[in-house]
Image (cartoon, rainbow, N blue to C red):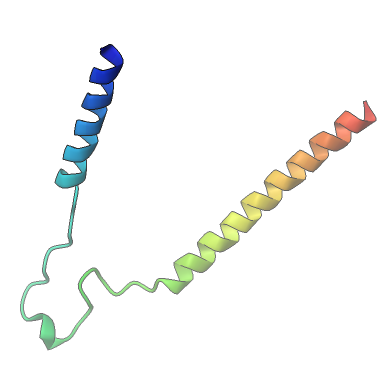
Length: 77
């Protein structure tokens, strides 16, 4: 019975949070058809994706090297 209640509480909390936290950016002041940045800003996306891919590759390389080094030490012992 306790396990059922815990699941029910977690599911209801997740459902309520998904409805409450559904956020949208506010509409810009003035006429959006007059020009300017699009809703949400005009930040470039391509640069950020390149940075994230580079950092992910570096992290993956470090993990592979660390695992390889650990295996080499185990073989020597």
